[in-house]
Length: 119
Image (cartoon, rainbow, N blue to C red; front, side, top):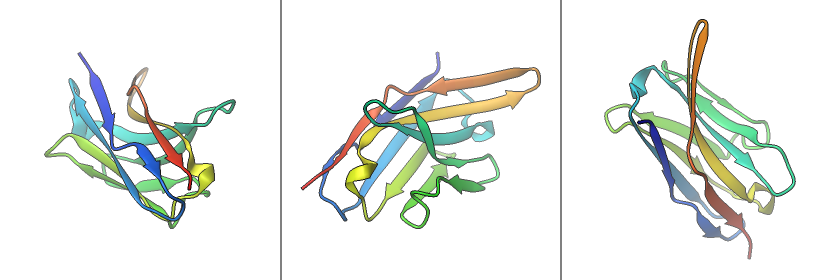
């Protein structure tokens, strides 16, 4: 059974830092591309950051220079270090694990963790 368990969400003041963690089980973590997505009320779920099996990272323009995604294959965990947070970063953040092996796609989601940026 595949599980992605996010933690680290909460309330933070504008300009502050916050780190999210996502612990995976039931998959061969090292071969999966890991990503963080977010969804604000009334909006679609968008990619925030992703890191592939070769540790190449990609970021949404809105978070470049502020967020860092890292993976620890020994701990089956992916992190999202968020700095200089803004109120517009408020959303539910979801962890994603994806492995494309043609013709199948293995795609899993966590339950989400709320991040609220407010004074």
